[in-house]
Amino acid sequence: MSNFTRNVVAAITVLVLAGTVSFAQSSGEATYKAKCQMCHGEKGLADSGAGKAMKVKPATDPDVKKLSEAQMIDAVHNGMGKMQAYKDKLTDAQIKDAVEYFRTFAK
Image (cartoon, rainbow, N blue to C red; front, side):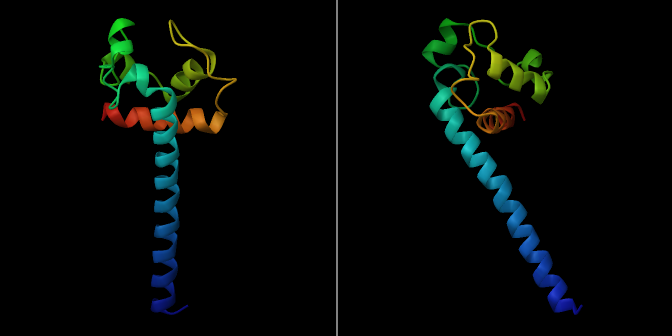
């Protein structure tokens, strides 16, 4: 295989992988904005009216940051505290993507 061919294959691989990450983030962002933002806030800071009223912890809170992705997915799937369960409203993939998007706010 020539260097040119290797470079083309490598470039295509990078573009495909970048597109996959971008798609997951954009679908997670869309789900988050539609179903989570009203309580968790635009940037995960729980600064919305509902978030403040329910005393939702922000994504940057140490207690929230220490939760694993699996624990967050379970909380969204089954509900937790005042948060309703979304297992009948969202697919597993939508929940996972929304959790991944939410976790970007803690960085």
